[in-house]
Image (cartoon, rainbow, N blue to C red; front, side, top):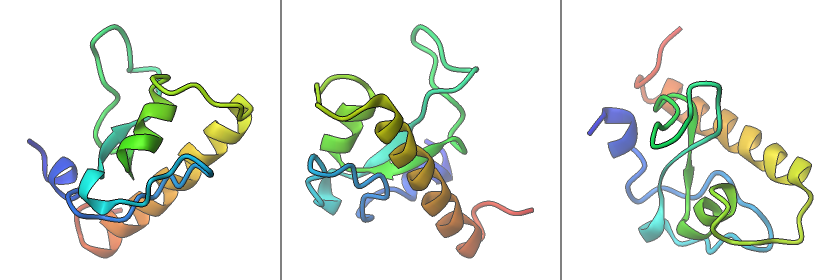
Length: 96
């Protein structure tokens, strides 16, 4: 397991997809976001991911149906990616 994946344990959800986010750090994992590298049984790279609770993870992976427009879900994913990468830079897990 990569350092980036391990760093998600016990964190606050950075996706925060309202009203679905359960805000429970015990359920937070590294949620891989859709990318050109993603495919059948292939995840995006760990650096293209966000800390996300189990409910938000279900939304972005399509396991939970919502009334939200896809554009709003994508906005939450990009916000979560930015926030997660900011944390990684501050903690030295990513560098320029």
